[in-house]
Length: 140
Ligand SMILES: [Zn+2]
Image (cartoon, rainbow, N blue to C red; front, side, top):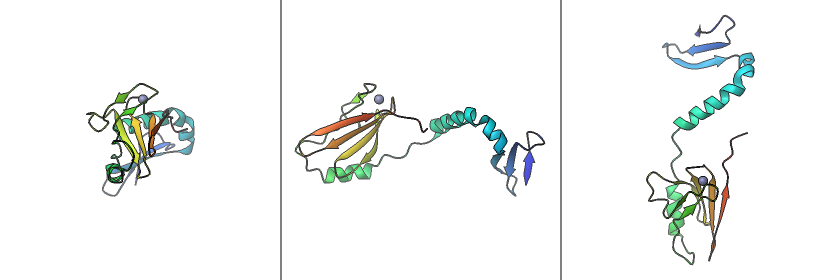
């Protein structure tokens, strides 16, 4: 069942299920082609602001700690070279300055800087840690 809300050409049509609940909007290819450049950033921004971030992979982190055999203590400090955001202990910050994005028992940990969204990676070697910082880039 369809219900036209905009105009006779049905460029935008709300779609309803049998119970009368709207389950989506249909936008014609012509209309979408005409407006998507302006509309997509608005949609992206909205989704970004409202989405709940993926949970941090703390199981992976804990597994890394279980297998920790590096020649130094577990390092909890993270620094973003791009915006200067820094913490002594990423886990202790509330709210987080950095969110854990990935960890593996090979010693690679990745964090997302919460102020500029850069990706901070720390690679743990036997006797040293190297760190790199990749700026956040929008899709496309
Ligand atoms: Zn940053």
